[in-house]
Length: 134
Image (spheres, rainbow, N blue to C red):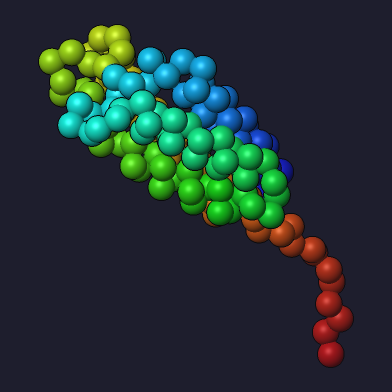
């Protein structure tokens, strides 16, 4: 389980860093996801990108993986209303309603993935030592 958690931590970290960097390289892709009522939508894109990069880096550091998993899970829960809102918009942020419907369950996959990392990535491997019985 520890090896699987380590591999999934690294993959999640790489994905988060990649996604966070893309917030800066392609901010116009992410701006439509930010609700119109929020001011300075570009600032929200940059802020969330920075948080994704930091959490992604933390997921690569073994002793920070549990905290990174919890942080990523919280971030994905924070993004969840945006994806739900996007499904019900007359025109989804990017693509069609079918694309919005696909993005929504993917958000739950990331929540579960981050939760798995949070729960199992920091647990030390248990040594199987035979104890003499007295």
